Image (cartoon, rainbow, N blue to C red; front, side, top):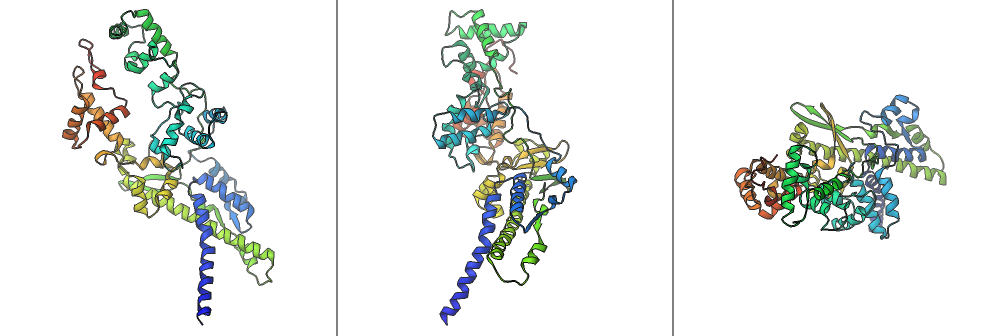
Length: 453
């Protein structure tokens, strides 16, 4: 009797596994994809599965046009992209397969000007590469053509284009006096005064330096390319389409799917009815039953993909209401991915897959498309974002006396008093550098040089 009771239990368990596993497998495949790639993926399945149908397969031209050319469509550039130019060079480098893959991944973070934007923590999130692996291939990237590619600041970009000689005058100027050079480049009387003041500073260590040598070094710097990717199209993702859109609603913002992919695909009930007719089972009917199960699993996964995306979008939009209204990064509320995962009941890995390479269309005038990952701002000191801390520092520096700029210790004390944020000096130094602000000794303006702008 016990054996007879246990058998149905085993059969039920096996049947449950057969139903659930394909859906989960399809969901894992769909999670990292934006809706354009999901549509392409499911259309491929439609071509191979007689039980799946697509609304666009009926020949409705209006549907096809609105799908292929939505309002926010950005046509790909015809010329060679920067990424294509770099990929050929990377394949010729003497690197391990892992390093080449890390380098190929890293070039997708290059800005249209050719700079590496964002932080190593952002690059590494959900990528499968560690921060140290990605930072380790930066020198290889910066050794590629065009010169200056992969820089993380204007100063680094220019230094990459100059001889690696610390005593070279142009190198010294870019490294230590970049802001002052900008005031010296014209032929105006004011520029001449700035050049003379810079010359006097340099003569403290280079007594024989003359005005013509200084001007020659500045002209050399002017020939450098501040935007090394200028002559290439920027198309790591030639078509950027949002998966979510946020619209003003009753004093706040409401989120919705930009495109409901699931409405385009459905089960062919006529084919299902034919299969369900009484007939003798053959290998062909068994094969068709497997395809029917796959079709149902894929549609289930497609709905789950949309539900998860919308669930994450609703949480982020509800949390970032101030940013959606102002479009100011300083209004972003710290929202690490772990917080999102706990709030919506998904794993950290799932959240990482959902927010990466996904975009939100913010309605209004003007409309704006932002990466969904931007709304997942990590918290830093005292619950403030890095942008907010940099803004505190810049605000205080704008108010300081040019003759007596604040030290990092003084900035730390002022931030505590003014903004109620206890912060260490070394933390101030870190964020001051991230904001591109010089140390107090370099910000100090010589007597008689006027007010710093």
